[in-house]
Image 1 (cartoon, helix red, strand yellow):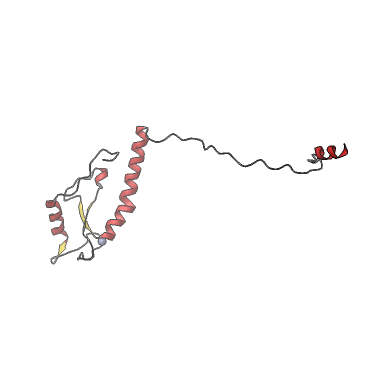
Image 2: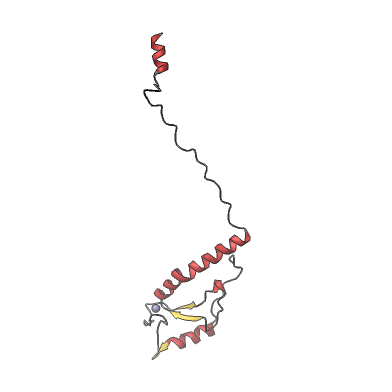
Length: 131
Ligand SMILES: [Zn+2]
């Protein structure tokens, strides 16, 4: 359960089978984005075109067969930023963002007194000497 109030809905087996058939050319499955061959070394990933977190249905129209590289590129460059923004907007509208607070710090240490012609520091010391 996330802030958008939905459980993740995976593709049912029938949809995955239909998508797998769709991406097969000459009996060999291919990635539907880059066209690379999906053999035993590259994992086959069924990807939501419209992300599940943003209301994408687990249907055949919303399913694409990807290789690991294409799936990661789509997930990290498109889907995650969109869902993070949706979360931020929802949190803000629900008032769930923490209040902005002023940073309280001790600041810097007070600088040591410096000698100057108009304001000699050693005055008290000098007056003690004169006594
Ligand atoms: Zn690919």
